[in-house]
Image (cartoon, rainbow, N blue to C red; front, side):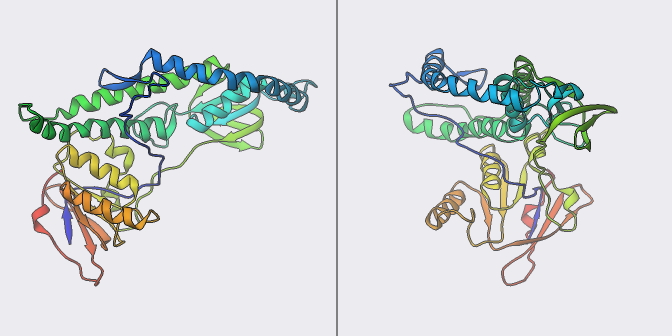
Length: 355
């Protein structure tokens, strides 16, 4: 089978979760309001959540003080050993893990901390990154915004049965991308502010480990008693011919226009999420995976039910199919070649299209 169109390769697993909260909790007075196309918690919810943490924080305050005193005695702050280093802790990478570790070290234990991170960009590279890391900038957050936006498609269809006369809806993809990117830029600033408020020095640039106690950032060296490497991971492409023509999850979250056709290689939950998103927005989506059912490792009954439901929504499922190569055509379109379980390579001319 040959699938022609835009191809998204399988990516490294990233944290995912439910797209929205559809419930209100009377006990907490929890409600969610829509502001500028994105969910924000109302003051009632924030106050309830804040109050629920007060008792926990009070109980841990005394033990935290004892731990901090012990840390001060052992980390060199009390005996002057820290004077030989620029910092007690230097963190390479300002993703969720690096930011939290740095903040806690500075706020809770009085350590002198620095973090280095590359300049913000929507797509990570050897020279671009941003405070917040994968989950905030190129994973959970943008994905959930797109999941929520795509759910309106079914709501428009369902509304007719409840008496609504809704004109045929259309998507302004550029506006969706602009609003999403504006939110990600805001969150990048939020994470930088969190570090600054904790007293952590933020150094923008690519960090390189020189030795056990030295980090170099864009030609300048910094020393630290402890160096934390929190650089995270990268999405990977399959080792097949033509893989360079495909895109990864960073890019599929930032397409400049809505593709008419999209092939997703991989039947894991991340691949299915992207398939569902673009299917809801109106793209013709094909999902290719080697197993009889998607979501390997999940409950068998759930796997079968989900595969059936995805086909009901219009997704094109190609199970027991192994990708062999990606071929770029003279018109710029891509052809994904796969082998079926019996070893035969099949073609499907009906999927020819430019992304």
